[in-house]
Length: 303
Image (cartoon, rainbow, N blue to C red; front, top):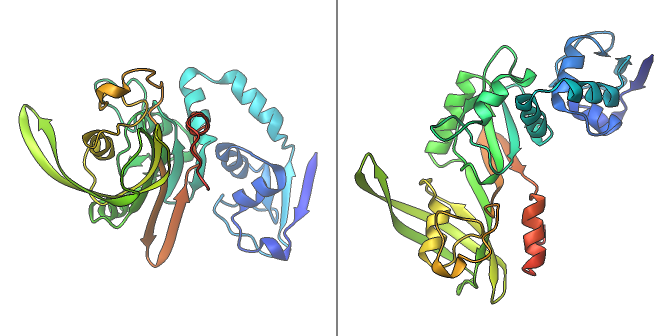
């Protein structure tokens, strides 16, 4: 069975993988790339990469491609680690030649550690997305924090992105639901945060610009833009002013010990940066548990 469609003027310069999703519905990125490689999907009777940008009147052919059946068959063969890959591939925000952007789930580490049985770097190393290369972690995101996360596909891009993060040229926006009503609706937090390294006490200066999106006497929804990138910075700063984040079991005030949420209500909502004059902006949809707590606490998020 061959399915064919012609690219119209409205879709010119669109990546072929995005065009396929717009025409066929939600298809895992890995399935599109595999089908392009093995010739189940061709453009003008030729194989192309998922990043190929289509032109007007290009002819796309799908050979014996039933993506629903393919997904069903894949699910049957999945091992536990493959299921983790699949669940995260469904949350891919962007996948280009140099990096992928994920909406990371809460509860999974970015990279291996003494307490991490599963992590994104090891998991995606087995994925078809990184076939012929490997994932490079270019920044940090706490295990229990959800939201925008980037992994590079090659050493050059990894070094570039790492430099951008280090030079504070990547602009990050976080959202948190915290206990109590913040007194001020906006401002800056400038703190000397304490951490320990091999028994040594280290004091680090930290800065965050914040804005209260909605609040009541019980809870607040806060938007935070960290200028520095200290470990657990936002969690510590909210704890220091007596408004710990719901679900934070490490930094919580005495008043927040009852009804501890299973999930940490801290979400990496947006990342902005520029590479070679090109602007990149990525947003990660809020998790369902986050939206549920907003509703319970009668807080609104206009976006």
